[in-house]
Structures are given as C-alpha cells and as structure tokens.
Image (cartoon, rainbow, N blue to C red; front, side, top):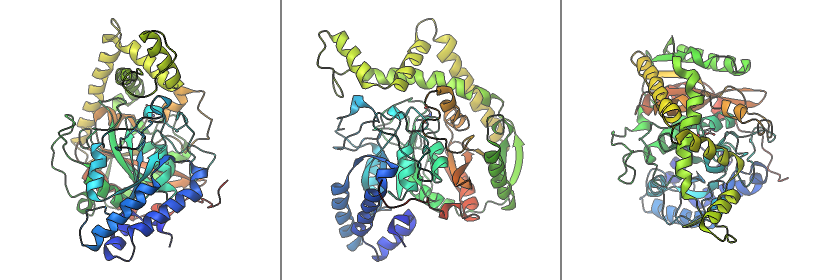
Length: 489
Ligand code: GLN
C-alpha cells in the first residue's frame, strides 16, 4: 500500500505500533508532492526541511512512549493561517514576503498534538473566491480532472488531501470555503460552529463569518483534527468555552431515530439534475440507516447570497484597510506623498476581486447607506438564524447538497462573478447563522465528486459528524482515489 493513501487514524496506529516511522511517512508525502504537485499545484510554500526535522523529533517522542493525538502526522495549512517564521501570502501580492512573528492558535494546538507541517496551500486572494483562480500566484487543479477547479477558496488544502500530498489540512470557511472545495475534491470538510475554533492568527476576511476547519479523507479523521483545534482561546474573544466532547467516540453512537430535516429551498432551480439525484439518493440512504426524514422550510434562504455579499465585503473592506504599505507587506517605493503611497501600494498589491469587494463593502458602510445596506442585511441574517432555530426544534440535523454543480472548468466562470458566487448558494446560510456544517463525499458523476452537506445545531458538531460517519461507513466513496499519474508534466 502507498503511504500517501493512509488515513490519519491508520497512520496514527502504525506510528504508535512503531511499524512505521514519521520520517518514512513524511518522506513519502514529500516524495508524493514532488511527483504530483507540478500538476495539482496545491502548495504555495513547501516546508520540506522543517517537516523532516519535526518528523525526527516525532519519532523520538514516539520511541519514548510520549506524544499527542497526532504525533508524526503530516498536515498542510491554508496560506491565510499564520505559521511563525513561514511566509504567509494569503494568495496576495500585497503579502508576498510577509513572515508572521507568531503561530495561529490552531497551529499551536496542532503542534502540541504532534502534527508536522508540510507546507502552505494555495487560496483565492484573502479567501475571496470559489475556485482558487483569484490566487495572485496560480490556479490549483482538481485532482479528479486537472482541467477543472478544485473549488475555493481553500482549494489548495482540499486538493492536497485528495491527491495524497497531506493526510489532513486546515482551511477557512467564510461562506463555504471548506465545504465547497471538499465537495469538489471528494474529501470531508467541516466548518465548525462560529466560536468553536479560535480565529487568532487567521488573517481576517469577514470576522463575523470566518471559521477554521479541517479537510480529511474520512469523517473519523475530521473528528480527530477537530478535537485537537477546538476550544476557548484567551486570544480570541469570540471563541466560546462550551465543553469540547470526545468527537471520535461520539461519531460511533447510534443514529437510529435521529430526525433529519430536508430543506425544500435547497432543491431549486440552479441545481444540476445529476447532483440533485445523487444527493437525494444519499438522503434516502440516511433513511435506510434508521434516521427519520422530514421535509422542512428555511424560507429566507433566497436572501442568503445577497445579504452575504453585503456583510462579507463590508467587513472585508474594514479588515483590509490595514494593508497600507506602512507596517508590513508590499510598499510602493516611488510615492512622494503618504496618500500616493497608499494608493500605489493597494493598486499594485490587490487583485481585481479583492478590489471589487473593497468597493462594494465601502459603499455599503458609507454614511447614509449603512442603514439601507449593512444594517438591513444584519436584520435579514437574524431572520435566517430564526429559520434554523425553528427547524432545529424538531430536527437533529439538516441534510442538503453542498454545491449546486459538479466542479466547473478552469476559466469557465472567471468573467462572471455572479456565476462564481452562486457556487456557494447552499453553504452560505450556515455561516450566516453560525452553525456547524460539513460536506461528505456522496457519489460521482462522470468521475467528478459530489458532496452531501450535513448542518448541525450550534456547538453540536458531534451529531452532524455522527450522521456523516454512519453514511460514510455504508458507502465506499471515501475509498476512491483520483486517477492521478505520478509523471510530472
Ligand atoms: N466563495 C465565497 C466568497 O468568495 C466564500 C469564501 C470563503 O468562504 N472564504 O466570498
């Protein structure tokens, strides 16, 4: 068996038994990156030397019977999450040479658990996009079909896991950026409840929506990574001290009798018939597993996309004001006044989608328009949350498609932002309501993966994971691997 095909849980077991060393495993992953990443292009920065050094230390810890939940496991980190001393570009020219002086809390926690970082993965610039085509550096390719996008914005992390370049990865999800690429790349991806995972060290996009979440090949592995990164953090005042359950134990609990809401607003015009059919079959399987299905309504779903495109750009325009060329990042050297320096730095440093969002957001927040746009959008957001509250009085989870289509072709949507935005129509509502949601592989159309989305109650990642685990165990979608040749272009 190829070492790069191992799941996290399998590798943890082999490492603990000492039938595999972390140096062997990390070496095999780095080898895999070398042979396939010229095609997939998942990584912006590789950390090969550091990873091998960490692997040696992990082997020493394992030899002396020490170590945490992930000792010796190679993982990849989306390039909007800070690793001390390693370039963190956010897929932007404005941070091309930025080296953070501190670790994000999630990075500290993975380090404490013993994980090894193999590199930083590609992303749409500042996580704004659904395809990685907005990265200032290059586009990542979908390992299942190199002519198609891996989704975004965490497309590098999703494709790295799908292609066997890392056993797990972290991404960030503001409107779907973990779940949509997970669906497109045939892996599991979870956005935790807002407040479950610390955002300290995550470069902010839209602070009231952003959450960090894992990508893995199995639900059990997602439970394991979530276990390691969850919990309150004094450095993030929006992280909440709700006790963190033992997710790996929780997923094995019985699912019989669980009530699953099927929102009728998620099976509407715009969804590809093949995707709808596949997702409906997966939902039928939930019933076969003993769960009880109920059609429900989330009436404000149609407002999710327009309200998101007021709130997210408004918050982004404020968060991105800090990139002014003064303290760090790109700085235009040829300006004669401070104002000119701001203008040139931002003109050169930001790409077109980021500029579009800054303009939209600045407009929505401007005096005289704030009430009509930002404030009104926040009110609609409350209505959307109330829709979910009502459904969760009767249901334990909600099941729906993760995306309306299969992965689209590279270039197909770049000229049409609305088409690109529509890719997130089913993922945005969970961000607006702050709820946990995941995508689990539920089938293929012409070799392209489809994701089933499971949305849970706030802070009840356990039940969503449990439903996904029961489903996964009754299928073999998670055992498929992309048909990726090892010969570089
Ligand atoms: N695709 C959405 C956007 O462009 C969501 C991005 C995200 O979740 N980071 O805003």
